[in-house]
Length: 356
Image (cartoon, rainbow, N blue to C red; front, side, top):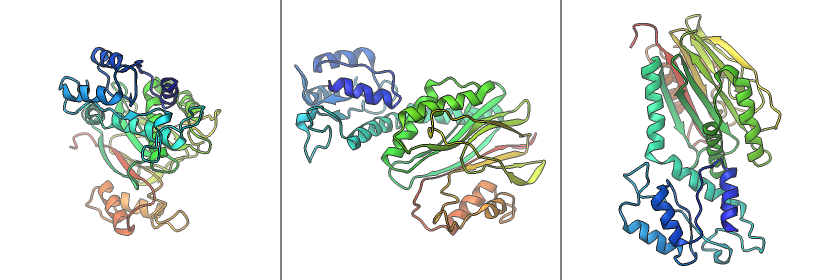
């Protein structure tokens, strides 16, 4: 019964490649054969309990994460209802064996955090960014800062094909455990949903619909995502109520804020989206950010408005500095920390021909 509950919540969190064992001995056989990235153990199991399985795994150097050999196999232990107590807040002790919401959130988030902290995960993202720079000549600068131990912002850039590089930035409501959990839900959906650059509208609508079925009521995400087509010299993007991106190009040296109206991801089950296209020739830059940039110290009295952003990004504050470095330094100078929200800034720049 506990295994079925774990299966339900893990699958709800976007995890699909799940294996189960009925006791400790069977668990060791499955781990040896399948080489999983993460193991969840119950403290009390038939034949061999969780602590004994854990000790066996820890004593054998061959039991390491199959994809990150430099560290031990992650083993977050769990316990059944009758072991719950103030010092061990896991499953509730009700007869229905219903998990406490906070415990489920913490468990899923810890699972996601373990997976995201794998060196192979970080290396994969770094490879994508490096490949984007080498393949397309795109310079990527970014800053990410959480206001809590766990954040609800995320961004990424990745190669699509020979001519197109994809990107997105997303900001979930709130911050902390639940917001962080939602970012991994989104990431799992993206990984499981085939990207179709020829029909981004349908792709984003599908992501939003699936998010809606997974997110608690009242939770959603604002986002900007799309791709840059190097052959056609355009950027095609979809907005989901994210802060307005700022575009600088040879045709618009003073920059311009792009439309970002659109329904937030996961808000409803029937959201529709519109793809927009803008010129993005060599010499263009796109600046994206989460709303912490315009919401500090609060949304009513922000110290950073559109005029200030435009000044910082177009040389009005420092002609010699890189626009990204200028706006980041200026924001830090004008806003006292700590922030009340996660902060993300990303700039994608396409150099002119012959420029390093």
